Image (cartoon, rainbow, N blue to C red):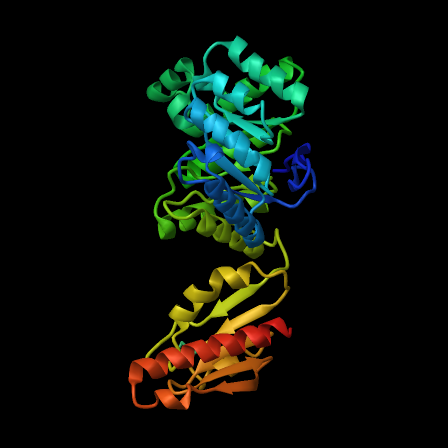
Length: 381
Ligand code: SF4
């Protein structure tokens, strides 16, 4: 089936905040969600600086949008302060109380996420829509299987509609309310925790609406299970042209959600460029701590503004050969570490001689010297 190209919704772009186009033919954007509470940060300069720095790092890793839970008025005030120091567009995630959305809209938030199903009377939704219209702020209508309208929840129980189609129908109804209000600056998400329901709901909605879709599998689980679920759902939908923004929801860090998102977009051909890390799984032939190096270097490498492949291989026997397509690679023999470029060895690194008598000191020295040399070679690319 052919789906319509979604219309474009723009968020951010004011001052130093990144401008992000959602929908149309724009690149698919990556979102994550802040995992900590934010109450009080507006009165704590160091906390604000640290949040601002972490958002900058998320941006370097490939994140486009960051969402914050706003469960109370204190959080709404804190979010306004964060929105003033964030390089990424900040989204306020609101449930139940529309006044929280109105408070956030006094600040520089770029988007409001509401679930109209739990906001209550239509006048409350209207109040949020009207304020967003005045301020040029977008809204995400976020529905999930836990908040279906009662007629659809009953129909699901009676088996006359499946949950995915009930979810899509809920989103279509909410979207119709926004259209009636003449407000089209919105994105829609329908979250289920099953891969198949996520696919079916998004397909059903996309066949009837040109609103851009934010896709995600909710409560996806710990890092491995969560990435598997999101990859299955996203790859299917993205190949069909459905999905303008994604979030890989994990019981893990925002950084890992962003990295997983960018890898999915890269492997589905939706995002090109950047650093690609290839690393061997390691086996009994290894003479280099592949796992340690990758976990130590991953985020720094993925934050570089370079279009390169980095190979991290466990042994000299196979490493430079298997990694010869890489722009830069690293491997080792146990006693020394070797850096290669396009399969040719350019550096052989040894531990400092003075550490020879002490195995631990020798290993530490080898690791430090190797990291230093690797950084030098990397920067010269
Ligand atoms: S590169 Fe070497 S250590 Fe890594 S998996 Fe291959 S043979 Fe094993």
